[in-house]
Every structure is written in C-alpha cells, then in structure tokens.
Image 1 (spheres, rainbow, N blue to C red):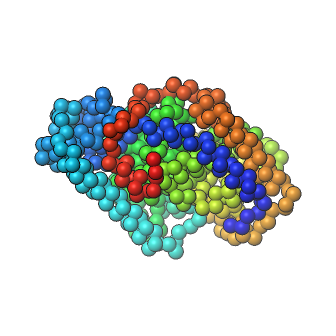
Image 2 (image 1 turned 180 degrees about the horizontal axis):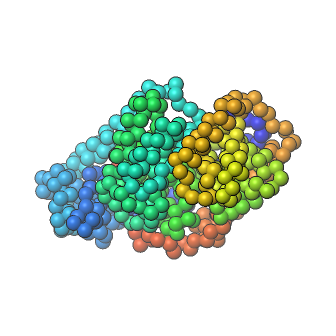
Image 3 (image 1 turned 45 degrees about the vertical axis):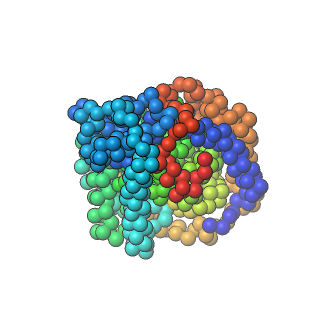
Amino acid sequence: MKAKLGLPQDKITRARELAAAIAAPVQDYIDRHTTVTVERATLRALGADGVNSDGVPVPNIAVESLKNELQSGTARRYVGALVAGGLEVDELNTQITAGFDLATIEPPDRAEVEKRAAELVDAFAARVTGHVSSRNAALAKHRENEKWPMLYLIVATGNIYEDVKQATAAAKQGADAVAVIRSTIQSLLDYVPYGATTEGFGGTYATQENFRIMRAALDEVIEQEKRYVRLVNYASGLCMPEIAVMGAMERLDMMLNDSMYGILFRDINMYRTFVDQHFSRMINAFADIIINTGEDNYLTTSDAYEKAYTVLASQFINERFACNAGLAPRLMGLGHAFEIDPSIPNCFLYEMAQAQMAREIFPECPLKYMPPTKFMTGDIFRGYVMDAMFNFASAATGQSIHLLGMLSEGVHTPHIQDRHLAVENAKYVMNAIKDLKDDIEFRKDGIMVNRAREVLDRTITFLEEVAGTGLFDAIEQGRFAEVKRPKDGGKGLEGVVKKAGDYWNPVEEMLRSRTGVME
C-alpha cells in the first residue's frame, strides 16, 4: 500500500532503535536463564509424552525429578536414560509414569547421548518441516480463493467435539481463520492437560489431542470449500513454550504469543514470561507459525484515544523481541483494536489514522485488527453499525487478520446466527470498498495525518522514558496498560533458573541454527 500519512522515516527508525535498546538487557537476562516450562517443552520435542495414573504429564514428572539440576538442562538426563537402558521414547515414558526417577541414572558416554539426541531432534525437525511443506502446498493449491483481510472467527464451547461443529460451520460461513478460545484457567496451570477434553469454562483446554482433532476437522473443510482455513490457539501462560511445541507438531497456523500479555493481564512473573516467550517464539519461527500479539488488550484498561501511543510502543517492542527469536516480519501479527469511545467527535478518523499508521510502519506484518468490544452496550443495532465501521476501517487501511465483531458482543456469547451476520456484514463492506485503499488519499494537514504524527511523537517520548528506566521497572511502575506488576511478584518465578556453564539443550541449539538466532 502507498504511504499516505507522510510519517518521518527518521522517527520510525528512532522508535526501532529505542525498542532495541529496551529489549537488549531483557534479552541478556533471557539468554542466561531457563525455566521449568522451557525444559518441559524441550523434553516434549524429544518425545516425552503421556500421563501417570494421577494425570500428571511425563514432562512435569521428569522436570520435577531433576529440579536440583535444571541449571544444566534436562535433555542430558532424559536422553541418557534412553541410551543407558537401550529404550525407545515410548518405553521410557511408560517407565516414568510408573515411577522411574531420571535423577537416579548417571548419563552414559557424552558422545552416545549427543548422537541419540541428534536423532530425536532430527525427528522433531522433520515432523515440523513436513507440516510447513504441507501448509505451503495447501495454500498454493487454493491461492485463488484466499482473501485479505482474513476473516477470523472464534469458537469457545469447552467441548472439543462441539468446537469442531462450530468451527466447521464458521469455516463454511466464510471464516479464513478459526481460533479455539482456551479455557479461562489454563494460563495459570503449570502443566498441559492431556487428551481430548469436553469440559472447560470460557473455552476449551489446549491439548495436543485437541489440536489434532481440530486440525483434522478443518482439513476436511479445506478440501470441501477449496479454501485454506487457518487454525489458531494460544501459546501463552505458564506453559507457553510447551503449547508452542504442541502446535508445531500438529500444524497449527497461528498462535497468540505476546511478550508481555501474561505479565500484565494474568499476573505471571515478568522474568518467567520473557524467558518463556523467547523459546516459544523460536519454535513458532521454525514452524512458520504466525504469532498474534496482544496490544488490543491494553485498550480494555486504558483509554484508546489518550493511550494510543502505548499500543504503538508495544508493537515496536513486540517486533524487537520477535526479531530476537528469529521471526520474520511476515510471521508477526502485531495487534491493535478499534476501541476509541464512539462519543468522541471524529472518533472514526482517529481509528482510521491509527490503523493506517500501523499498516505503514509495519508494512510486511500480517496485522491483527480487533473489533469494538469496550463500548458494546447491548444495543445490537448500534453494535452492528459499529462493526460495519470497523470493517470499513480494516478494508480501507489494508489490515491482514480481521477478527469479526458480533452485534450481540455486549449481551451474551454470540450465537451461530450472530456470527453469520458478522460474516455477511464484513463481506458486504469489504466488497463495496474493495479497492478504496488504493484510491483514497489523506489531506496532508488533515485530522488523520496530524493524529498519526502526534501518536508517533508521543510513542518516541514514551519509548525514551522506558529506555531510561528499563523495561522491568517500567512494567513495575504501570507504564503499560496502567497495570502495575512487581518484578519479584506474580506466578511462576520459582520456575526460573540461571543456566550453568554446562547447560545443554539440543533442541534450542537446533532452533538457533535453523532460525538464525545468535546467543
């Protein structure tokens, strides 16, 4: 899209330099630490799977048994047990569920362990790269039916089999991406539930079996509709890296994967979150999975007009951390939202300015644009108009991932017919202004141009302040989303461990090599 706002390139460059300066000391901390869930994710990639009679997952059992030596990594012990016992991974997993303690086995010859580890890593890599090839082949096969922006719908019944019915209906109604909303509590669980699940509050548990079931169902729809349908879930919370591994192994296409969301909105410790997000993003980069960041959530606690600069600042910071993890811009679904108070005069112009600004600053990123929710009152007629204006802004500014708004958003969990109306609304508006984004120009001294420049200027000032205090302190002070989180507070800090000199993680080594990430 042609640039229309005349944003000074030197200021955009300055913002990126500040984001890099903000991320650098955090990245240094990340590189020197591991976490219990990074170790569990590593074991999952090596083949650890299953649960014991109490429902405790094998990766949790293994990492708990090695809690006194996490600083050296868990891979050597797990793979060492395979070599020492002449076992296959399924056999070792069965022994672990029966009570076998990995800490009781002294690892055999290092060369043998590293050889076996390389075989396991290669098997994981082959599985993931095979999925990437399959996705690319399906996208190419149905390229002529691909639409932009992608229409993104959610399902959230709590029962994976009911989700399949809803997701299938959504895809046939016109959804290009279907997100299975995760059960509300799962962010705070320090383990991943196992198998297919049929109960969940506010959504459905993210499990590897649930991923497999939904992927298979959508693949059937793809063949019927001759249109690729992307599967979305959440690589977030205390098990962020593990869920990323599971998603990579079951060919998910998008993962909600923000660098600060868990800190601000789930009270997960900041040190834990930053380490976990880096490993999970390396997995997503390797698996060619688009991440979706969570800037839209800032506007649930902050005013969208007054605090618009915090959204842009977070986009710059998320971009930097994503780059550090090897994610290409085409995989960075940076988030924003249509959430300015509709009573403000010219609110639509401000929304257009914000959306156009994001599109011009991040031209290669598949931006995820979120619908109005904060000011949905239950008046379905007003809500339908607001969604139509949101659809207009999205199409007119060339957004990429468009989460459909529902006319009954403020009343109840939307019914299937509400979703149908949302799809029809979007289709009508986007068809009616199909090429407007290429035809429209903005007045050089007009409201939208001046608003975008003002937000960029305030963003630079804000980033300078954060660079001065440091990101950890800025979060503690409540500079993002007006939410304060203490550095040593939140959930999961006890699961962060400083790496020792002999730390070894063959999965991480492979990821760094394949994604170009340097420590």
